[in-house]
Image 1 (spheres, rainbow, N blue to C red):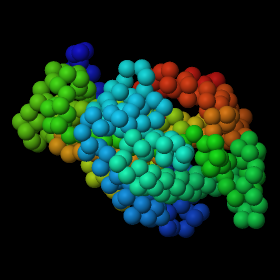
Image 2 (tube, rainbow, N blue to C red):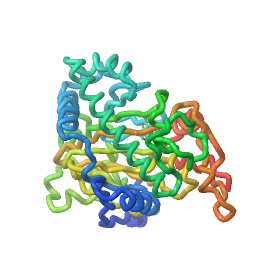
Image 3 (cartoon, rainbow, N blue to C red):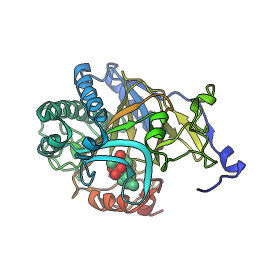
Image 4 (cartoon, rainbow, N blue to C red):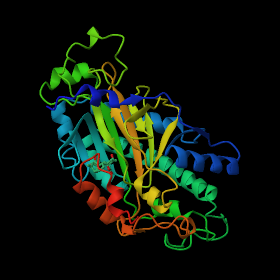
Length: 372
Ligand code: GA4
């Protein structure tokens, strides 16, 4: 274990900033401007009046709680995580760990119903809940991507034309979906659904005394969290552990819903961490690396992490909208100018994904594709 010097510990600043809140019931052109502003300045925003039915969310949440409440040996039956299934503590393939257990699923319905057999005693109920949730959240992701395209002046919708144009067509061509949402509407899209459960510290400690991941790397004094009752929400306190280490999401767009337990933090600049207040009534949306590349850096894929709560379980459900593996990702021509030349060389999603899995979680993988 590396011992941190006092300067290393003080580098980390926590700022209280509220994320922009987008009301999807407001006037469309106003909403699209606000979304573009949020994606350019924060890379993150919250959505209210999102139209995803409450019962669809509740059903998915109940199924998830049901799974994580099972004994460890039963949960292991849904593993290993590669390519899809149950994982615990290990993240990716290069030695990253966190105080998290999770289910990683493809959004392909055939794959989900296959997987459900090892996840639930009532596989049909589980796969229907996942299917309903994914359909609703994908709809929301498409709507948000279309609003982004409108806000960037890239797309004029036309209800009469079909959506057959390819992602490489001019972005401003008239169609029923934008150049962004076409990628995740594609039948071959590579989108993912992930359910994360961050157990409270007390449970984690009782069950696993050997592998823990502390935020600051001082000696671990966390076995008695009640000795620090006034500091239990401070992330530099040893009672808080890394649930999911800092990273950016590789895909296009992430739609996250959590229970009422906080822990998500975003990093608008190096060494600064901003806690995101939990709100089960909203969705938290963030720009992924692919969208940063397609907007030629106009939108930011911001680093984030999750800190566990010492007393309460956090559960989050994330939909990662991704292109088909063979899709070529390049900056939208309208966003490349003499003053703003192309920042990244074109790549396929398959190439990018391979590169992401070959690196550690915290690596800035988009930089490998930078040309300037
Ligand atoms: C971060 C976003 C998604 O959770 C995920 C993660 C994936 C994994 O957990 O297997 C990655 C991580 C995520 C980024 C870089 C690579 C891939 C672990 C890792 C080290 C499922 C994804 O697509 O990328």
